[in-house]
Length: 501
Image (cartoon, rainbow, N blue to C red; front, top):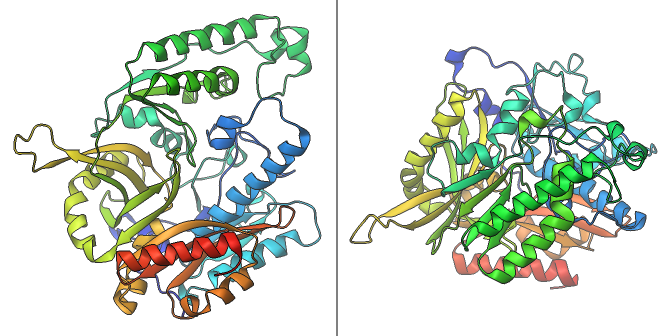
C-alpha cells in the first residue's frame, strides 16, 4: 500500500513553542492500567489511580476463575495492544513504550514488537515511532533511551516516582468528571456526591477482613465496622439518587472506555441502576477508597441533568501547547452503541474549515482552563449541540461539554489523515471503526486488497488473541461522500462477521 503521511504528529505538536525552551525528550507510555485485573503477572491492577471501565462496572463480585481469566486476557489485549497501537500511530518520531501483554518468555517481547512494527510500517519512515517493549511500565529504562519525561494516557501506579511532562495527580484530576463539573466551562448542571470518610483498615476489622485483606471489595460476610460503613454509604447514595428528578445522567468520577455513565429516563431504568449500584459497582467503588488515594476522590459520583433533543453529537480534538495555544485537529461525529459507549467516529473533511471557526471559542475556553492547571498535550471533548433556548428565533445553538478526555482520544487519528484521504485521494468522508473478527490480518487485507492498495483503508491497530481465536482492530476507511462511506463501513463489518464479502 502507499505509505501514509500524517498532516502532523504528536512529536511535532509537543515541539511547538520554542520560546518556552526545549521540551526535553518526551516518551509516550502506551496503553493503560486496569483497576479490575492485573493485566499480566508483572503488571498489577491499579489501586491508587482508579479507573472505571466496563469490566470494573459490570464484572460480578463472584465470577469463576475461567471467566476471570477470559476477561483478564481480553483486557490485556485491549489496553496493552489495541489502544496502545492506535495511539502510537500518531506519535511521530519519538520514543513510545509498550508493555508485553504476556510474560511467559518464549520471545513474547519480540512477538509484541513485531505486531506493532507491522502496523507502523503503514507510515512513511520519518513519521514512525521509536518502539520499545518492556515487561511492565516500571521497567522503562529512561537513561538508556535518552528519555527526560513521560507522557501517559492514563496514570499508572507502577510509574510513581518517574518524571512526567504533566504531574500525574493533576492529569488524573483534569480527567475527572468532578473537575469538569466545577470548571466553569459550559457543561450540564450537576450535583456532586462525595465521601467524607474512608473505611477502616482490613487489619483493624473482623477476622474475615484480616483473611481477605488484599481483596477488591469489603467481604460480604464481614461482621465488623467496614461492612457497617459500606452499608451506610450505599444507603445514603441510593437515597440521594432516588431523590433526583428523572431524567438524569449518573457518572462515576473516572469512567473510561464506555464505562461509568448511566442514563436514566424512566422508573424502570432507575430500578435497573439501583440493582447495578447496590450489588456490583458501589461495593467495589467504595471499598477501593483507602487512605493513600482518598485525596483523589476516586469514588465521587456526579448527578447531572440530561441534555435533551441535541442536534449534534460532536467529538472535538485539539492540542494544547506549552504556551497555552490551541491547535484545532478535528470536529467529528460520534458513533455510540445503545449503552452510549464509543464505537467510532466519522468526519467530513470539506466541513472542517467551517467547523474550526465554529468550535474555536469553546476550544480556547477549554485550552485556557487546562493551561491554567499546567497541562499541555492532546485533548478530546464530547460536546452536545442544542438549539439555544435564549434565542427567541431559535436560530442560534448552544454547546454543552458532556465529557473531557484530557489525553489522546479515539478520533484523534481522523484529524491527521485529511491530507491522506481528502487532499490526495478525493476521499472527503472518513470513519474510524472498531472491528472484531476471526480472520487473520493477512486474509482480511486480501479480501479488501483494492481498498488497501489504493490507500482507502488504513489499519491503525491490530491485536491477535490467539487463545480466543479472535483479532481486534481499529481501522480508518475513506470514501468520496457520505453514502459511499456508509456502504464501505457496512462492507467491512460484513466481512469481519462472516469472513466473506
